[in-house]
Image (cartoon, rainbow, N blue to C red; front, side, top):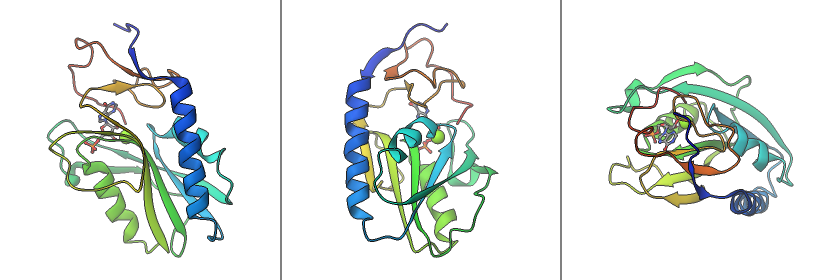
Length: 183
Ligand code: IMP
Ligand code: MG
């Protein structure tokens, strides 16, 4: 247990890409009065913290927590654990999340938030796995495309561990074989 994950995306590459995303977002929202960032707990907390400090547009930060169950997950199996503090009606909302695996979580979350009638709604995702099972939801801003491996670090977990690794790593096969109970 707790063997050191192999580096997939190192710290310097992460910092560089997060800076590029922040620049692009700042450019795109230059005309917006204020950007409303929605971090998806827990996985997005480090990515969001780094991203928002590089933005040059006015913004607020809020969090939402959802939990998903097991492998055979459909949108219906996703539960809202903690809601936003404020109404997003009429606001420019940018959802910040850690990963698109099947895409079911993001798909469900975007539907949920769209129903609250924000002025605009986009997503910024740190990593996306290249797999056939994507439900079709696309991110507006994407950090990295990766292969279909279990990644940890920089907010991402396995059974709620490894989140504070400063890089994105891949677990040795033996440890990544059980399913993910954390978010
Ligand atoms: P979805 O399949 O896109 O709905 O992803 C569901 C959730 O599973 C994500 O939000 C993550 O919390 C988690 N997840 C999926 N793949 C990974 C991974 O490689 N590392 C850590 N968490 C993951
Ligand atoms: Mg997550």
